[in-house]
Image 1 (cartoon, rainbow, N blue to C red):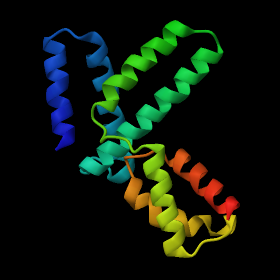
Image 2 (image 1 turned 120 degrees about the horizontal axis):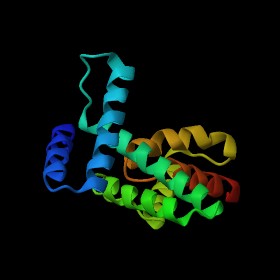
Image 3 (image 1 turned 180 degrees about the vertical axis):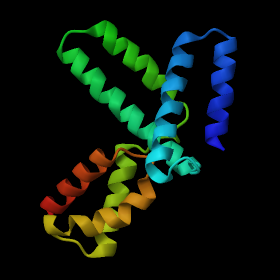
Length: 151
C-alpha cells in the first residue's frame, strides 16, 4: 500500500536527516490521516486511490500557494513550495499531456452526443474516471468547455 510506503520513506528521510522531505512527508501523512477520519473514523484505512487523491489535492494547494507567493513577490516562499511540490509529485502517476486530454474529450463528446455547454455534465461523467489522478480536473473542465462552445 502507498500509505505504508510513505511511512517507510518518512523513517528513511528522518534517518538521512533530510529535513525538507521529512517535513513534507509528515504533512502528507497528516493529511491522509485527516482524510481517513473524515471518511470513516478511526477504523477507516485509506486505499491507494484515496492516498493519490490526497496527494493530488496537496499538489494543487502547492500550485495555488506558489502562484500567490509569486504575485506577492515572495520568491523564497514560492521556492519552498516548489520543493515540496516536487517531493509530492514523485508519488503521483505520470500526468497526461494537454494533447492526450483533448483526444479523450473529443472521444467523450462523440460517445455522449454532446453539442452544447449544457451537456458538459455528461461529458465530464464519462471523462473523469479515465483521467482521475492523471490530469488536473480544472484543465479537463476547461478543455471540455472549449470543445462544447466550438461545436
